[in-house]
Length: 154
Image 1 (cartoon, helix red, strand yellow):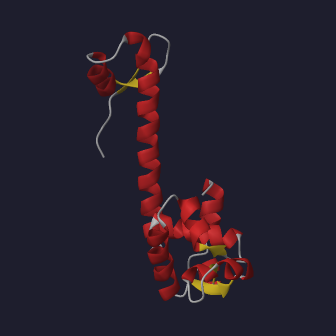
Image 2 (cartoon, rainbow, N blue to C red):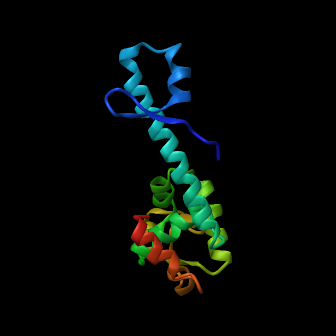
């Protein structure tokens, strides 16, 4: 990761020297604090995402697959794929592939969903919700996933 030159202004507020220099040529001085704050939030979000990806990778999962397991752990009765896609901000096609992967490795299972069943076409994958298997609820050797996630707010 790059080294960032952080300094404090006359009010004691921290700022990134490089960002301020780059913005100064293009931004009115009164808009600078808002843009610097936004830049800091974007940077923090990227760092958090990288950290989450690296943390999930320790367990052989992507951050999104780990998010699916967390969602299912808190709703053990199952979650329909469409709702899962909405909550994860991904397409239904994308979530189907992610869940199929977790199902292949025995971390989630299909379960009939009577509400969905009444609204769907016969044979449609929309007729089934997914729920975690015992391995998906607490993957072997990685109970640390859930204890660490709870402690860090994931």
